[in-house]
Length: 230
Image (cartoon, rainbow, N blue to C red; front, side):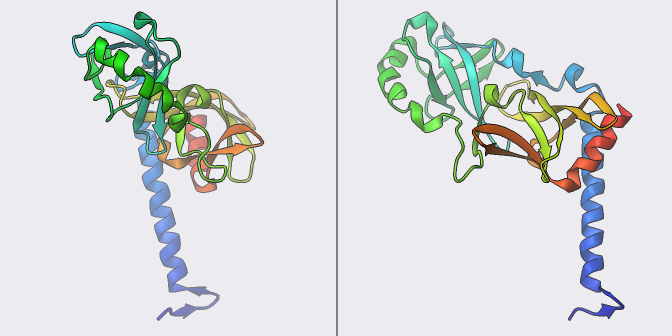
């Protein structure tokens, strides 16, 4: 039973306490993300470095390079978009982590197949290219995200107010998942202030053919406060 206290209810207080607790947890989380300058933090690898990585076959022979990376809204890398320029195979193709047994190595990524096997697999990889393009999924919400498409996207709150741009995606050292997203905040008196935030608080939506990064209102205030402190 919900007990009435004047114009409020006990359940309302419970929700308010839960909301305050969640806000505090989020503030502490982004404070940790920004304890060191994110773009100089050794825990993070900038997207520009990830996109320079080479792709080797199972014998460690370099056979291509990464052109793009596809990741989901949990930040997990799902596919590499690879140009097999060393094998002269033409169009770039998507390589799913599980399908071709991708491993992270110091020089980049290594496949579970040798170069001859990759050439044999290439037609099948090319035919499946439409299944992992990073386009919007159901409705206008993105399920799989292209690194190159996301970079530079406008960041808005849930009311549509522009608060900045997505400047960078910061990966773990293995390049297998997104550690944080780096936003450049430009809102009211805040100009060109960078803040690293968890990808879990972001939504990615298509609006009139353009990708937008959307942040729910409860998360916007702590992000702006962190930007001011920076």
